[in-house]
Image (cartoon, rainbow, N blue to C red; front, top):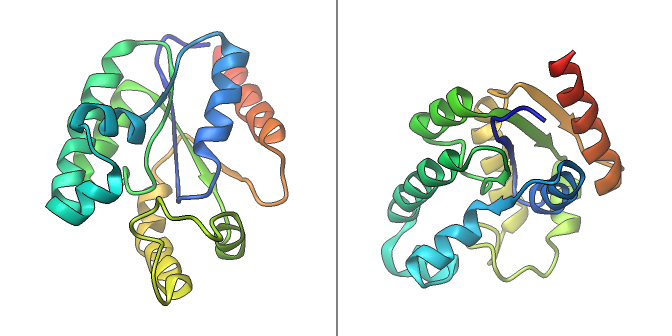
Length: 172
């Protein structure tokens, strides 16, 4: 694996954390979940941060945590679904790591997140339309990646294997 971190981007429910854990085990390197880092650093859940301070405050924390974890060298990093929104984050990811975008369809997101209560932008009424709108708004940002992989109908292991083949191709 290259010394630069592998950075997984994608919409909520695309499999970033699940695929990231498998990749990190395969590559014998640390797995870092950016949302978990934010929770640890702030001492609060993401839902609480959104409710008490708003999305902008959360996004600032996200950028600070991203800057910190990108200094760790070899690692697999799973960003939050909105981690690509800020141009500063995209620039950091592109300059310091290999960016892998996990694509997912609206139907898969709705199926995978059915009943989820830990996603502040997912819950409540009219979640399907809100998710569809968010996916459309973020599409251009997700496209800013070294590789994009469609995760629909694939196992976590199959997606991880596709990423590993790509990474091995970089070394060739």
